Amino acid sequence: MRGSEFSAVVTDIREESRAAGRQRWQVSLDRTEFHAEADAGVLVAMARNGARLEIAVIGVVVDAGETWHVVEKPLGVGTAVRGRVG
Image (cartoon, rainbow, N blue to C red; front, side, top):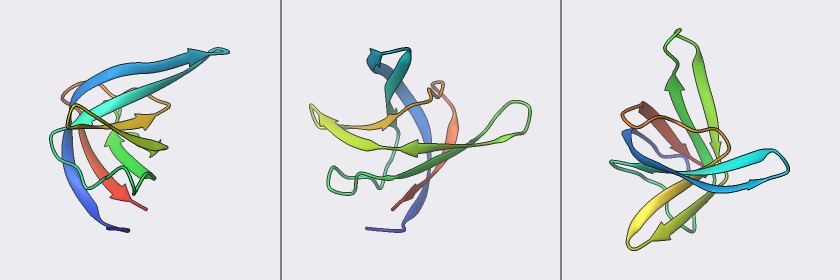
């Protein structure tokens, strides 16, 4: 569903790739509205210093039934996020 928003918590993170000094990560959440066919959106988190972090979701991968959100900035396990699809 495009434009949907939800709250979630990061449950796992793994490095997807590293090339030319750039890394991509896959982040798993305890709940999501992202689907493989709705592969773009944003995750918003608050940094410890109070700064608002907006991290683009540039893809979605389903691996063994688990949804992984592809991002270029890592988020720690336990981080609360607000997700927006579309």
